Image (cartoon, helix red, strand yellow):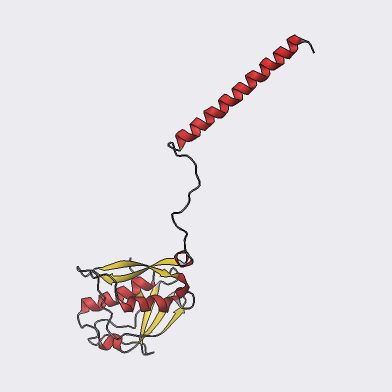
Length: 189
């Protein structure tokens, strides 16, 4: 090859390399501009996530605020407790009451859960007799009791209604018979 051809090849290769470098620089600047100047770096957590934190899940328990409105109380719990009988575990957390001083529960003192079973989309809850014996006779508060239970239990996507039994018996009601348990209770939200 003669010198002239070598010079032309060197010039062409130099031009191609310069163009490629220019394109690379242009795209890097464009990418940085699209990321608002954020440099891609590996994100390292401040602390390792423990097994306990990894298993946490969020549930909503419903209690009553100072305006007698049913509101949710968001709780983080260990998801392992929900493995065997999630409905029973969540209902027992509800019966145990709120952790916040700003909330209250109207579920009667001494209420125990005898049994819970799922029947289609309905959850059948069998409460102890204390559920009706210790309930406040105020109709509004009785409605709030039912609302707390129904809102809490229908957060499970497979549950759309709640049926209440007292010591295994159907068709019971609160002592003043204002709210009868022969009906299915549905979340109206």
